[in-house]
Image (tube, rainbow, N blue to C red; front, side, top):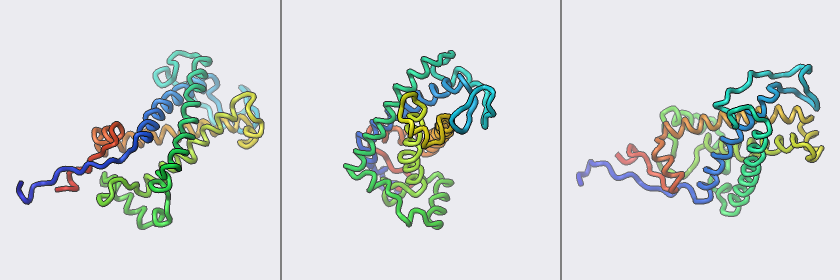
Length: 237
């Protein structure tokens, strides 16, 4: 081999089996929940704050009905959408609980997702932002490490956004604990919070998929299927 020839990419075991399974189960659950949730929203596409809201009450948000190609089912069926939504809401909720427990047991949360004070310093955040603009999404010294933006986004989704979706969804269920509805300021407020959180989750999915494509979809998908990730070739040239 010539001295100036590039070295082969380094293979790194980046994602454990449980993380990979949770990721793909979550992916299916979120897609079904977004589609069925939009169908449920089509039944009354108006949002209110407080305990009550109906056709003649002033709404803070009113949207046109979503087309069939983004809803589940594709034809109007409130009952069908509710069945899909409830089934996969249970998948999302119990999957999240299992991920949190397993992440604490194997120290994945403490080791990989813990946000330290230095992660929030302006200098380091600026460095991470410049690296993202340059399409460099990993640390060349430790490819398994998450940078500040990745930690903030993952922790925000796993420990804030997803629990908020679960709790606000439970607050909407008839016969559930009344105090949970009161916690959000009423069932209509819970419905508004649920819709906003769903919009934030949808935005996260879009950004996540965009970054996967920019980072190299074959390599990223391989790592989430097999666990093994290859460092980019430019790091070895």
